[in-house]
Amino acid sequence: MADIFFHGGRDYLLYGDQQQKAIFFHDADDPGGFMCNWYRSGFVVDGIAYTSMEQYLMSRKCLVLGDEAAAARIMKTDIPANQKAIAANVKENSVIWDGIKQAILMRGLYAKFQQNPPLTALLRDTEDVWLVACSQTDKIWTCGVGIADERRRDPKCWLGPNLLGFALMEVRSALKESKEVAPEVEPIVVVHGDITKMDLDCVVNAANRTLFGGKGVDAAINKAAGPKLRKEYLSMGGCRVGEAKITKAYNLPCKWVIHTVGPTYDGGPNNAVQLGDCYRNSLDLAMEHNLHAIAFPAISTGFLGYPLEEAAHVAIDAVRRWRVSNPDYDMHVTFCCFDTKNFEAYKKILPNAATMEQL
Ligand code: APR
Image 1 (tube, rainbow, N blue to C red):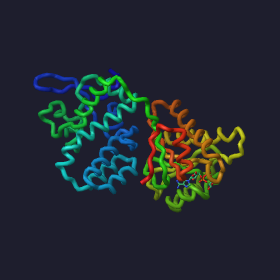
Image 2 (image 1 turned 180 degrees about the horizontal axis):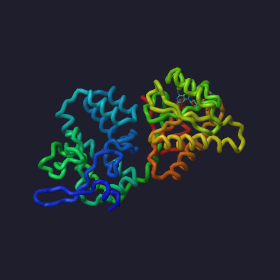
Image 3 (image 1 turned 45 degrees about the vertical axis):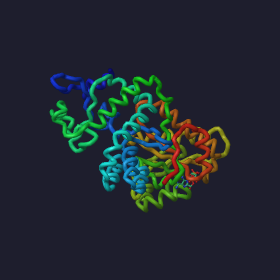
């Protein structure tokens, strides 16, 4: 069993008069947090890419309850608390949702783990111990009492049915039996849409060296963020080609904007190095700020003239290399393609990646 569980909540509960080994979990950042619905890990169900179980579950709930607009809003945000809040406002027909929710949960959990071999390994490492989700506010998916509450140890004292914990135990059994774990789905999403609409930790701007704002995606980001963004630029003293700088996002739906300056394409050997630097430095900066979800436009492929397919290869290669250098950091990467030609170029290079049309 992985050592993390000894320090991260492996414990016991009483079932009848028997002591049973148990893992109690609550927060996505805790060692057992990979089992939480708020834990970020990409997976695909019915061709739709989700960034977390919360996004999957809450959007499916809205669809079951007939509110397609709310489901669409949930798919546009990467923030689990917002996804939950949107779904909470949907009028509930509890009989239908109650009937189907456990089956929907199981299907999503199976996809989440089966498509992510490192997560499958962590779940298998829990062997056959009880898995108990804890939260005093959630009396549906969890056991309904807090992670430090002694009542968690006695199922007779639980205030919730621990739907998530039991579903995880079932999925764990199913994965044990099926020997076969899917080849790793590359944790990259390709979106056809407008980056200014993306509700993520951060989006990247293809800026210019003065950081004063120009045309293309730069103009769109400045317009949507409002004049304060430009004011913050002024204090930054410019940005060199390949470098990255971070500002707040102001009126944009994301939290931060990372500005990077792509190279002007001239066919020379430096082009790919500098373009790769844009992606690598942006990812480093996002990691330094503890950000876990980032969306890139196709840097340099507009005014700076970089051929689309060549630029897409450089971008994907840079992200893959960065992942290899930072294997323990969970970074959800989206390539946001505004125009159809770029979208097609990314899909061609990443035939197995999840793709999405922005709603
Ligand atoms: N969302 C996502 N992508 C967008 C958006 C948008 N809202 N608007 C444009 N794009 C795409 C373009 O289709 C292009 O594929 O961004 C890509 C990059 O194009 P540019 O914005 O022209 O960026 P780049 O080629 O890197 O040139 C940057 O141009 O506007 C100036 O100040 C900018 O000097 C900088 C240079």
